[in-house]
Image 1: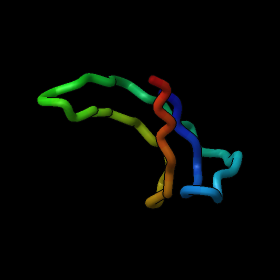
Image 2 (image 1 turned 120 degrees about the vertical axis):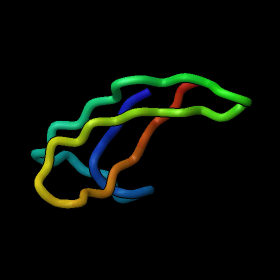
Image 3 (image 1 turned 60 degrees about the vertical axis):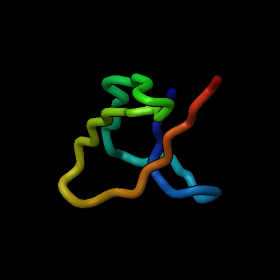
Length: 50
């Protein structure tokens, strides 16, 4: 899994530090913990490869 700044079909390379910290499957749902180091709310996209 990876993470990037932006929204669907509008992703970009920015200055925020973004990390995927954990990924697990519970009851057929994918649960993900991310850490975004930015002072304001920031849109992001998660990319799953399976």
